[in-house]
Length: 179
Image (cartoon, rainbow, N blue to C red; front, side):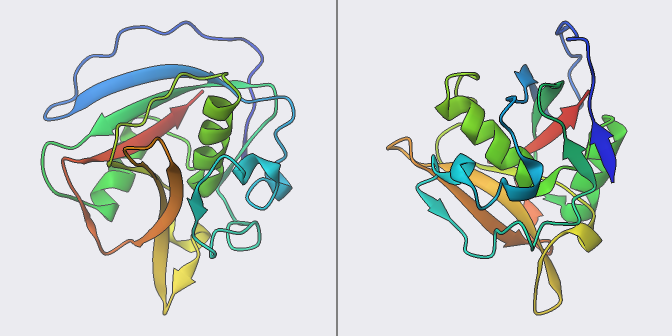
């Protein structure tokens, strides 16, 4: 596991467009009361309208990167212009220097929005995926499950899981966490 701790806040700079993708970036502060070990079953998940019951601390205990309380990271949201596989999405996150944070990144982002520490960033009725290695994801019948967030027209947020066999499309966002 890597730790995503940094002491200095970095300024946002305009991002150059990625071929075929719209690019949105935000700077995010990890709240001081963030607790990695109990995040997925703790009070931070309260702002979700619905949470897939398989999203538990135990099922995501092997996350590749642990986000550290009080540190800062940069969040990019990339929107594919067309279909993209899990493997291609993972490769894209790595090419952008992204940290693999899985469900923890999604819960932390929603909690920051709920607490007013981050402006709402998720478009209505789009899925936003947070990647990690297949071996760090929970499985259903041997198939790894990728976590995502979706916001409905009533501003309700759901934390869901999808098969890594799916194709992400132009209505999906790929979250890239960098420090």
